[in-house]
Image (cartoon, rainbow, N blue to C red; front, side, top):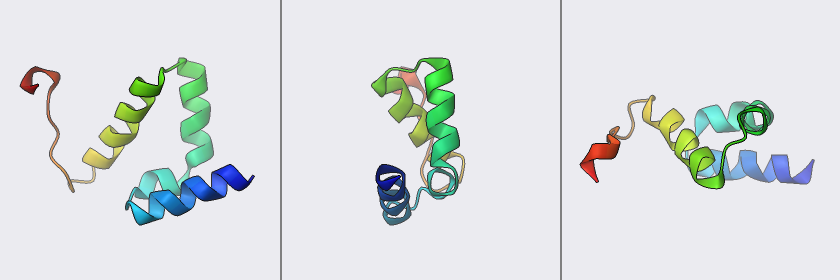
Length: 62
């Protein structure tokens, strides 16, 4: 699938290792969980946070 390959390429550029490794799994889980675009994006960014590369902010800090 061309779109999956593009996701992997962008994930590599952005250093989103987990997204690069398994975009199909992430997308499938989002479909199962019926996530909105906002929720899906937040979950992707949270996965990046767990690598220790960026800090994790709570929703209260907004």
